[in-house]
Image 1 (cartoon, rainbow, N blue to C red):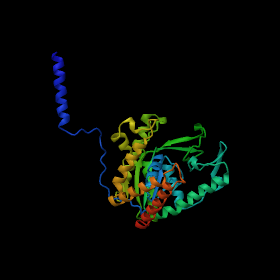
Image 2: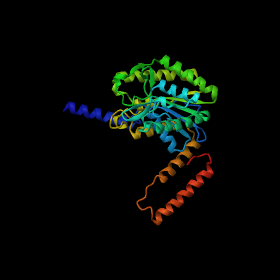
Image 3: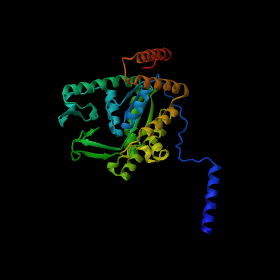
Image 4: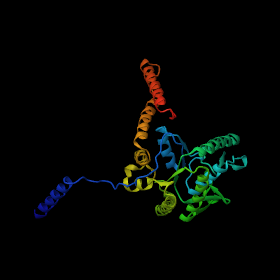
Length: 336
């Protein structure tokens, strides 16, 4: 009986403590105030891992002027540096840059989304995206880079952005150090600033863990990237900015409900949350209002009716066209 009374008394004390304070069920990641402001009038280029794809899709849905991964998904800093160097020199790809494997033509510098059955069509697709990116880079205001891993793959001494299901034993690997990443990034950023002195750069580390490396090895890889991003930001604090996507998922959203079924990739809810933190950091109130209006309009544009021939749907289409025209008149710089 005494133990029971003692237990109840402690429960009452705990209940009173809970009632007397606001419970904090997360460990919020503090993001320092940032001078960079992203607007719908700017050109935004995103390069990097599949997390860059996720953020890019969100920005495009909000009708920001974006170009997302013109080489396809790039996972490591060296491949991103190589892509930027190629864009700066403007040299188109040739047939000799392609190789055949598994019945498809591939490029070592491109993601498999560019691969194709026909060699010429594959090359044309690669160069169409490349030339668009060459022109876009000249006008880019904000470059967003997302690193996934510090590990780079090599095939016969050639840096590989994607292995294209070629047997892993055919590749060599290098885990680049913080210093090596900083050196290569400093070089290519210096060239970019010579061409475009006002260019702003946002660095972020993908929160997607590389389980195939082993969790400890994945953490070491992420730590190397975090140190490199911090060093670059400290070198150029006026033009290089850091966004803590990795920390938000690891610490603030520290629960498996924020992961997809593979328990590695972030869930749609987590992606949306991180995107909202990104826009809260870099997008001011007026631009966020424009985003909200565009988002609402895009949802209506994506509506698929059950009866498209009905009068009700025709009236809906007429109202939608008016909303689109009104928004274009109000914000003529938007791409709707």
